[in-house]
Picture 1 (tube, one colour):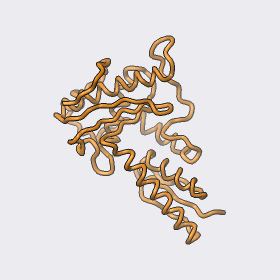
Picture 2 (cartoon, helix red, strand yellow; picture 1 turned 45 degrees about the vertical axis):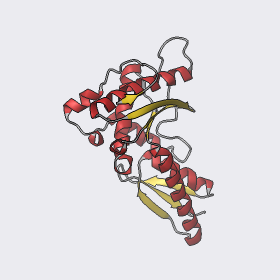
Picture 3 (cartoon, helix red, strand yellow; picture 1 turned 90 degrees about the horizontal axis):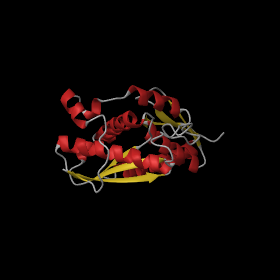
Picture 4 (cartoon, one colour; picture 1 turned 90 degrees about the vertical axis):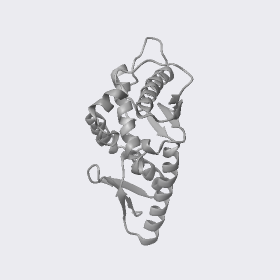
Amino acid sequence: MSQRESAVTDPQVSAADQAEAGQPLDEVREPAEDDADDADDAAEVAGAENGDSGQETGEVAPGLTDEADLEFEGEIAADYIEGLLDVADLDGDIDMDVEGDRAVVSVVGATLDELVGPRGEVLEALQELTRLAVHRNTGSRTRIMIDVGGYRARRRAELAETGRDAADEVKRTGEPKKLWAMNPFERKIVHDAVAAAGLRSESEGEEPDRRVVVLPAS
């Protein structure tokens, strides 16, 4: 069972709801989030990540600071994930933090591969479900990030290396380099790595086959 120090508000969307519906985590998609990802992807190179631009913070109660709002989102998310772990009979400790302008909830433990899945697909589905739970409590769209077992940090390092390697190849050959299909989180990391290497990149294609193309210097 999961362990967490602080008690939090029960979310209106329970993990049991998804379990009773018989819908696997990696098949769940929330159309509103997908639409937002598509719109925000155009701003990746400019530095927006999955909805940074123009988002309003949810008003939880008068007088709360932005950080307090984010902490509240984290508490809702942590409670939701804790319930899901209980339903799935998985062990894990839950950590909550605020990084910049988003709440981050991390699950750490020894039996977490089921919550990551191939290329993080189950983790992405879990994040979408958790965002839905937060949204139904606050009435506002959330950019909360969910991590499991440090997967995102490891993946971020791998993708940054991919971006650097692609930039080096393009500098050497003078030809554009098209990478494999990635989700918006992954593409953003690659775009940043390519920009740091002094080249430009863009995204092309439609989800789920949208991918980064690294361009030679003009």
